[in-house]
Image (tube, rainbow, N blue to C red; front, side, top):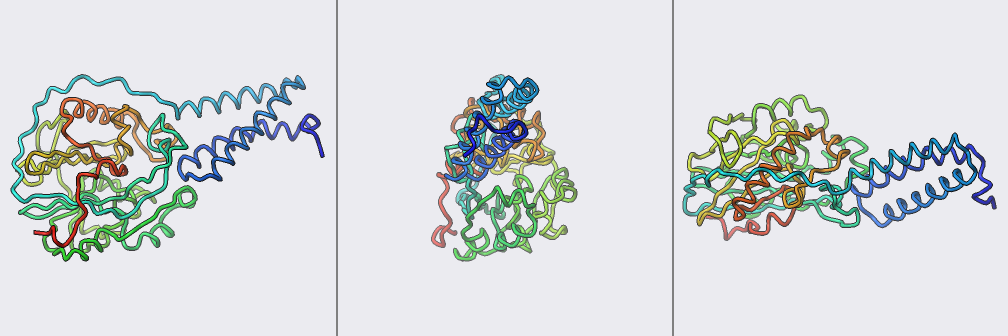
Length: 373
């Protein structure tokens, strides 16, 4: 057996170049698709990289030592993008709590449609790649006497086919999901009358929020003009949204004034019970939907502004690479996270509901036939 110290120089050179790249890729894969095998692979690759670098340095091979230093520096820089980097605290919010008059009987129900298997490291900087989490894919039904609304759709009836035919290969490799009944199937099982449904508010048009759109062929999809353009021009990333008929999209504007630090707003009913504000960054037309229920229970459905609550509680962005792959505008994401940090500090009774964090949905009952009025 060849001893490590007798490895030929070309092999060491390949290890010096490829090893750090493979380790970085294993970290990315581990954060996006956690498994014991991924942890073991990352550990083996790291040991091999360290061993090869040690041999190169021991041999005083200065050409390869330069490569080792450069690649190690790049790897360290990449790894630091996963370390905590809290945003500076925002200025205190001075806005008063907006008035709201939710009608009696108004309610909200969660419609859990599935999960993807991720890690805390995928969700926010400083999260551990060994903290494995199920990222929820949940639609929310908000009932109102003037017509009900869905906030996002979650995974639809045909998610398996959509995922297989519309999702690019690299995301299929790094994404595992489990799905249950779609939102439409849950509504039907509860005996819900679809005629009561006024529209579907998309917090944004990514696959895991718009997959169920085709399951509601008669229901308008409510969307901002900038997000509508994004749907039409977004390539594969909005292909799931384009599976819904373009005739169903209904644009709305932010004709209302300032709302909890956000410069503009749109009140869907004119009673303050459901108000959307622009929160671009994750996508060009992302929104946050504020819902006020009777007895003044207030919620902020923030979509994918953050994936886990720590994005606000720890003031953490996603990692640099995840932000780039998602096509985010980091400056806009940062600005809107800090707005929500200020809202949470001033009004801690407002429950923040990230679309993929199960902790935000605990106050909403699952829809049952007995709960429909």
